[in-house]
Image 1 (cartoon, rainbow, N blue to C red):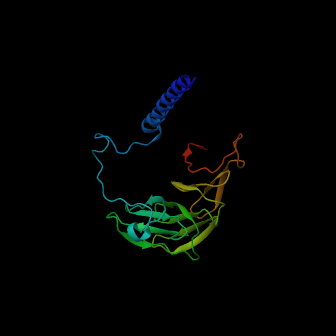
Image 2 (cartoon, one colour):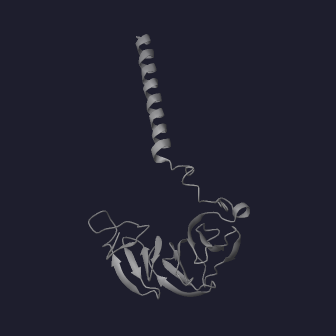
Image 3 (spheres, rainbow, N blue to C red):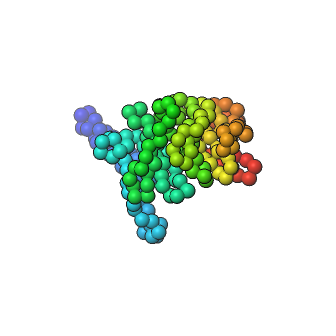
Length: 204
């Protein structure tokens, strides 16, 4: 009896090992994103700088959330960590040039988008607002928008994801249209959309 139990235990352990190996293979080959571009894809790419979260003392960022490119090719980077809660302008050399100073402090700045004239929109997920800055970094307006998750600017419109909907604004902050009938998984419902772009007359 004991011999049968040992044999059964060995078979079970072998099967579990095979299952674990299959799961590891699936993760490495399907789930995990590629670690580097192929030689052909990297031909026209040049590494300039890297920045990571973890410690503001060592990296300058704790929880870098989103970034947006300015017309000049610089980067705005939001840090959503409660201990930092800031948006920085980073030059093409990787050096931080300035920090956006809002009229009242950010709580969790996440989506950032830049208009063609350099105007910057920053969505604060916790405050439920979009802070608007001019090209020189001065705050000029606030737009109420519940839990903004993303801001995508296409020509003269901003497509802002939120709770259960995507709202479309013009550059003055005027609401032009709204897509989504509420939060959920039913027809016409959205959860927390993190991206929206126009396709002809529709939004996807």
